[in-house]
Image (tube, rainbow over all chains, first blue to last red; front, side, top):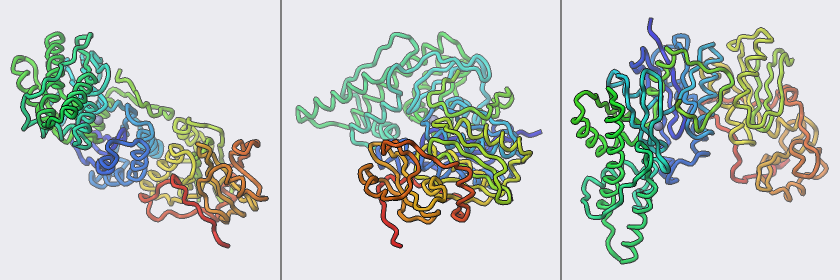
Length: 334
Length: 199
Ligand SMILES: [Zn+2]
């Protein structure tokens, strides 16, 4: 018998609902993006995000059901992002999910947002374990080791800023606007090695750090301004990106060596970065026994289809929530 | 017709089921910042105790604010999704009006932080002064000889709240039907756009 999961995701700035059949067939995937609004503010303003979620939540659910051409009765369980994320935003999605679950007496599955990003890779490939996931986004920079299905061990994390945060801040000082990632990625394509920036060092061999690099960029720009020298934005973007990504690459390389997984997957918003994709594809050539999966671009941004896939696996493990569970803005993955 | 009323816009979690103009089940407790954890526990309890299938609820009434931004969104999220999926009819009531308890000449004051308050005046449910955000000093001048409900601590008096389930029922003629469910959003009153209703 087929299994249908309806998932809701509202952890940050996308109001999303999706229905997925049998682990990876997307019947509908509705995302109402707030990006235009947050561009005006130069970043996500939590209260503004929550307000837009309550405006859109009922509509995205209705659309998801309509597009999937099924009724609530066909749904086996409701999955929802419990955290991490913005508390006010998470609340809206959780109440909506609980409403459906309570009204129609369906099981509810509270999920970790990053688990969704990792399982998004199931849309393109079968996951093989042990698996190493490199999670890179505006809120996360983590290496997660999965010995088997639905088991998560964080082996490395950032000691300060998330990589996406560093991209946003550097984009801001360069006057590129929000979100910074794609803008720096594009600009760096025409840049060259003209400025020297440090490659940060961290004690734990699998941990990351980006705040020193971010400060170095700010200092560089201040210095150039003081000397009335031209700031070649594409060269700054190039140097920043190379420095940030060579750190990511080096640490991932070490983890592959030490943990010897069968599968390496990328996850999160920065997995859309064209240079990171290129560098990873080059690096994996050294490891003929490790499969690399890069998620499709649409899965690098937040959506509910990826939460539905994660929910589908959690459903098989019967990881259901009760009526009490609430938003967990800093929910741990394990 | 079975009606569900919910208010999470202030520090209370208030829920009641109304049938034939009679409250058949109700709950109202101070539940500040715990409303999101408790709302379904209570909904489930009230329905089970009264042998009610949630799908039998045909009308939902929800307070729309002003009040706690996060709080008001909790019950409204539930209401909007119920109405969308189940064809339930959806109604709202202004939070300050709900707290006026259908009293004659009643001023309602609610903390809006930073020495400001949401404030409105009602006469048996009729709006005399549209709710707005005011400085506490201005509120003091506007109270006149009205009775006062709400966060009276702002005026160095003891807080006074109605029995919210009863108040929902008493103010039934002021429930406002929502025609387009998706367009319903809370009343935040972030900008102090208050004005007197001329009588
Ligand atoms: Zn995300």
